[in-house]
Every structure is written in C-alpha cells, then in structure tokens.
Image (cartoon, rainbow, N blue to C red):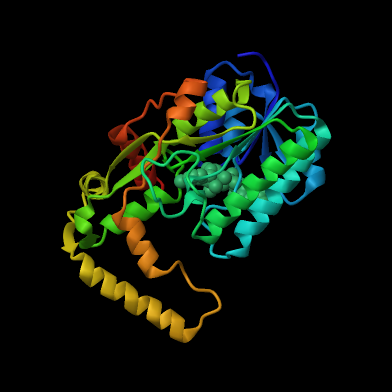
Length: 331
Ligand SMILES: NC(=O)c1ccc[n+]([C@@H]2O[C@H](COP(=O)([O-])OP(=O)(O)OC[C@H]3O[C@@H](n4cnc5c(N)ncnc54)[C@H](OP(=O)(O)O)[C@@H]3O)[C@@H](O)[C@H]2O)c1
C-alpha cells in the first residue's frame, strides 16, 4: 500500500479500531494514520499502536479541519450506535457527519468513505436485499444513518467530494460493545423465547471484514459515488442463539412461542402505547415482531464484483472472538 495519509474517525470503537489494525498489518506506517479522539476517549489501544492522535469532536468543525488537513482518505466510522438519548443519533450521525464532510471538502480530501448501515432499509420486502431496495428506516438510529447518507451524496453532487457509502449488517468482533453484549445478556436468562421457530435468517459481519471493505472502497476508482452492502455470513436466529448459549455456557433453554400468541402480546403493547399517547414510543411491537420473523439478509454481488470483496470470517470464528472479548471485559 502506498503511504497515503488517512484519517480514521471512531478509532476507539469496534470498526475504527479494527480498521487501524488492518491498515497497520498492510504496511501503512503508523505516522500516516490519524485517529480523531475525544478528550475522554479511551486511547490505550491507539497509543500502543503509535498512530497520530487528533483530539476533537465531530461537532467541532475546527478540530476536524485540523485533523483532515493533508489527508488522502477519510474513513468515517465514528457514530452514535447505542444511545439512550435519541437526539444523540441526529447530533452525532447527521450533524457530525455533515461537519466531517465540510472539513473534508475544505481540505480537498480525494476520498471519503462513510460507514452507514443496512438499518436504512427497514423491513425487507425482498431478500436477499440489494442496494436498490427501498429505504424506509424504522428506528431513530437508522433514520439518522439515512439522513447522513443523504448529506454524503449532497457533498458529492455539490462539491465533487468523491465518496463511497458502505452498509454493513450487524458487526461483531473484538471491542464490540453492542450486539455481542446484548446477545450474551439474552442467553444468560434461564429461558429464551423464540417466535416462528427462530427460522428467520439474520446476517452479521466481522469488523475486520468491514475494515477490508473500507480499504477497498478507499482505493478503488470504480467505487466513487457508489453504495455497497457488506455482509459476512447469515444463519437462522435459533442457530445464532444456540451458539451463544453453548459458548457462554449458560445452559439457557430456547422456548418456542407461537406466532399468534406473540402477535397478541405485540398488539397489547402497541395498544398501551397508543392509549398512553407517549410522545416518544419505541418501534411498534408488531413491526418488531415482523422483523424477527423475516429473513434479514443482503445481496453482496455488487461489492464482490466491483471491489473483489470476499469476507474471510464465518460465524464460528466471528462469534467466538466477540464472545471471548466480551466475557474478558466484564460482559
Ligand atoms: N456495530 C454495528 O453493528 C454496526 C452495524 C452497521 C453499521 N455500523 C456503523 O459503523 C460505525 C462504527 O460503529 P461501531 O460499532 O464501531 O461503534 P462504536 O464501537 O460504538 O464506536 C463509536 C465510535 O464513535 C466515536 N464517537 C462517538 N461520538 C463521537 C463524537 N461526537 N465525536 C468523535 N467521535 C465520536 C466513539 O468515540 P469515543 O471512544 O470517544 O466514545 C467511538 O470511537 C458507526 O457509524 C455505526 O453506525 C455499526
């Protein structure tokens, strides 16, 4: 790899940290890798790797300009993924991305790689879903990711900022503080209810495979202006949960809940929210139920054909690494 200067945002997180590891392994000198960190970020991982740290925040455009000046590729991985405060999704993912784009435009950065999410599709009408599937995001997080994609496209159209949008499925790996943590907590219950026999397929991708996709997207001329799904593997939900039960050693039992019963429960939950007229209500339970009982899988022909992307990590290795890290770090 040529010694281009890159800026990685979210370098302390799951994707950004694995991207930095991948760049270093491919021979990128540490002093060509910049990481945007916040004053209170846990930076031990980055310090050990000797990359250049730029203190700032996605909401502080001056700090972003300082970090972006002289950079060839921005890998924008920072984001609000698991927030209690729903406004944070808009602030960090939309406004923060816009400020990052502004800094990249100001610095004349030749390539901007944005990590979006398959959440932008919402309920899938056809599977495996291609990048042309309609986008009807269901949750505030996914709404913010789609709005951020629109900002990325606007900067490309208005200012010629060459960008690539990646839409990974659920990401797992070392330093995953979201999905693996939730699944580990789920299987620590004595009983895990499963609707529809757990036959619906769900898809995941190892963070290192996302990192490889980002590197390919950063280098390829063909990728400019494109959107790509990034999926590593898929499996029936029951198989995923059973794998976690076995690996965690929790001995939980999966209990099948008939769809009709689950639907009645969802109806009651939706009814309570409708009566309470809560200003902020969660995703409608019936939609959540439909999501759990339908395949959530994605077509990756485009990224394979255009960029030669080939995921390396299957289910067992991906989950095993993620679970071990989780258990070692108090999960
Ligand atoms: N995890 C998934 O399953 C998944 C799936 C699809 C797409 N994605 C997308 O992939 C990207 C990376 O996700 P991840 O799982 O790696 O997230 P993560 O582990 O939660 O890391 C988030 C990163 O963003 C940084 N960050 C948050 N707010 C910031 C701000 N205001 N200014 C600067 N940095 C900020 C965090 O820094 P601190 O260390 O300072 O907190 C951290 O480095 C996100 O854009 C996410 O939407 C994730």
